[in-house]
Length: 162
Image (cartoon, rainbow, N blue to C red; front, side):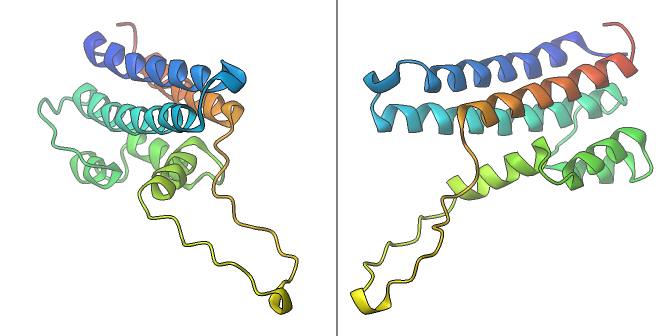
């Protein structure tokens, strides 16, 4: 049976992230680059928190009342790798371009120093595409929130009314 308090907590984090991403896209040129980046990073790290809370929610629904989870590996140790909920999340983690990998890519991008930009010497200029990092466009951010919300809804539906 779903614990409505935990469901609502995950839903709250998803709603907060959605709001931050929406604000990032609104305001046009009136927002400074710093403000847009603060909204972007705030949204991403709110989603990271939502993912961890989703793991807690799943563990509690599976009758583990005080789980100490730091990631999917901890859920695997708690539930076992054959458990349906762990298998579903593992499949999401392996899905290329899925919300789990997107969130991992964003986290890695924001948690590492940016490489120094070197000025090219005129004789060494070669046309190459510059690595701009992961897609953090407002539409990709909203798609990621929507995908996480769908995962939460699917989990809740599988475990009955709350």
